[in-house]
Image (cartoon, rainbow, N blue to C red; front, side, top):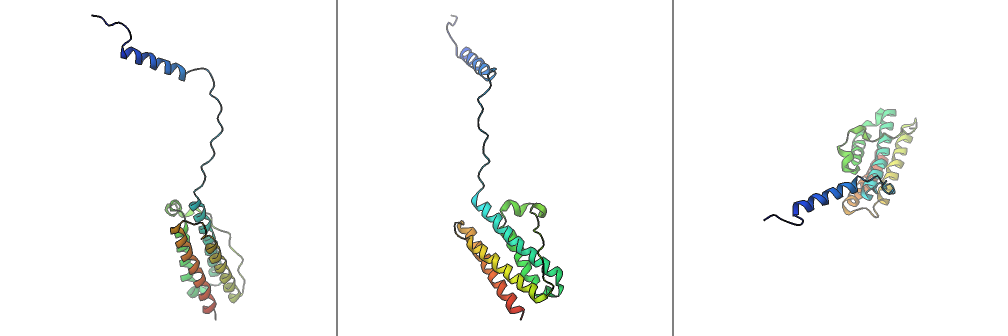
Length: 166
């Protein structure tokens, strides 16, 4: 007995043809507003800012070491610690990126007098420690602990530079 009426196969074919026709219409789609760039993750923003602050301090160490090589015994271990802070503070993506991924800060002016240069470095350490301490508010717990540790290390560096300079 032959079938009469609509079969399932026929219904699917008709529906598919209708969908294709709708998708190929000559009407222009309504313009939609361009999608805004996704908001940056607050932790990533804070990490970038904190890493940049420490990177500036690292540039200060490098400039003093270049101008006053005799300070290497005192400054090299502290400089290496600051380099480790930069790496630890950077977002995970930046840590795995090539070293050239972040721009180097401009070299600061270093006083010709060794004692004045170290004194300027002490001030830079204190500014950096203060900046990291100020960033604690609103930081996620793990990053807050890291920032507190880096700020404390900066305070210790400032102390060692003043005591080591006597």
